[in-house]
Every structure is written in C-alpha cells, then in structure tokens.
Amino acid sequence: MATRVSEIDFAKSILVSLSSKPITISADHVEDPRKLPARSLFTLPKLPLTMTKPPKPRDASTPPSATVHLKPLRPPQFINESLTSTPLSTTIQSLKATVGEKTGIPIDKLRLMIKGKILGDSKRLEEVVEDGGEVTISVMVVGGYTAPGPSVTPDTATVATASEGVETAEEIVKMDVDSDVGGVVGVLEGEEFWGDLEVFLRGKLGEKEEVAKEVLGVFRTAWGDRRR
Image (cartoon, rainbow, N blue to C red):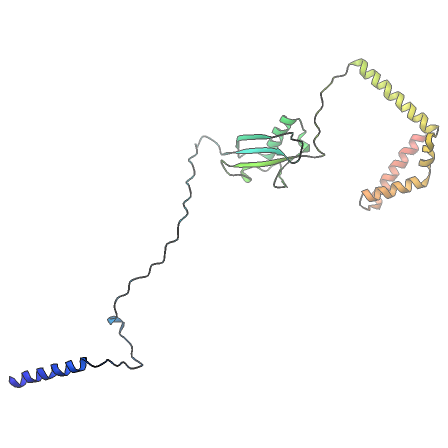
C-alpha cells in the first residue's frame, strides 16, 4: 500500500514539473477543430428598405383617368386648357376634336405632340400617362395659327358690286397685257424669262429636272392660251 502511494506522489511531482515548462509545438502541428472555442455566426448587415406608399384604392365604377394640359407649341396663346378626369381610353383624335371645338381650327391642321414627338391619331392616353397622372400636350397648327375674323354676311347688292369690280379688273388686266403695257408681253415672249423660271423651279423642286420641265410647260401652255 505504501509503495502504491509513493508511485502516485511520484507521478504528481512529474506532472507538476512538466506543467511549469513551456509547450513546444512542431511546425506541422494541426489543431483539432473540435477542441477550438465556438465562434459566433457573422450576420450580413441589412440594407435599408425604401418604403413606397401604397396606391390609393380606386372606385371600380370610375374608369381610369388623367389630367391633360393642352398648350400651344408656339405663340400666340390660342389655347390653354386643363382637361381633368379625362378617361385613359381617350384617343388623340378625340383630343383634336376637343381643340377644334374650342378654337375653331380644322382638325386636319392640328398636330398633338409630347416632347417634340407627334402623336398618332389612334394612340390612347393610357400609352402616354398612368392612371391619376398628369400630362402636358403641345398643340401645333400646320401652316401657323390665324385668328378667325368676324363673320360678315354680305347682302345681295354688295355681292353684285364686287362681281362687277372683279370683271372690270379682269378687263383692265387683259387690256394692259394686250397693249404691251410696261413690256410685259415682250418679257414673257422671250426665252430668257422662261429660262430663269426653269432655274427657279429646279431650285425649289430639289434639282428634279423632269418635274421642273413639266411645271414650266404648264405655265407656258397657260400663257399661250391666254394670248389667243
């Protein structure tokens, strides 16, 4: 029994002496991962979410619509209208009719544009604006806008006087041409005038020689018929 106790004491003394010495680890030492302390999981940071407002509930009985602002493409200010609650099924042709009613401009002379792009007559508002939105449409008049003058209904006597004046003016012009006043006939009979006219027509028609000659022939034929 005494021998066994002495062996235990001897083992303890050896372990105490070894524990006081530094631990030396070889270069090829591999640590057992099961003995390593547990590591906490890394969580990625959450990105901030942009909260969008939910769309307002729309009455099912009300069709989708938008506000349309009609403004002229260039002065004068012949129209400046805001059409509220315009159904998105409305076509550009219908908007042209509305502009025509308000301004008296023929529909075939109207062009509706958004950001410089002409809209086709069959296009609908739902293709250019969302439900409840607003859109500005520019109105262009082909050939320019002319303010309509006051409508005057001439009486019979005025019409007769004007007709007599026209006939008298035609007779005076014919007499002036026939009498070669100012050398008009001499100029029109010369080839220099017709040559200059042909050059002018070519410049306007984009150097299209055949078209220019055809138009020139129409003018010369009309002048020849006038001289007969």
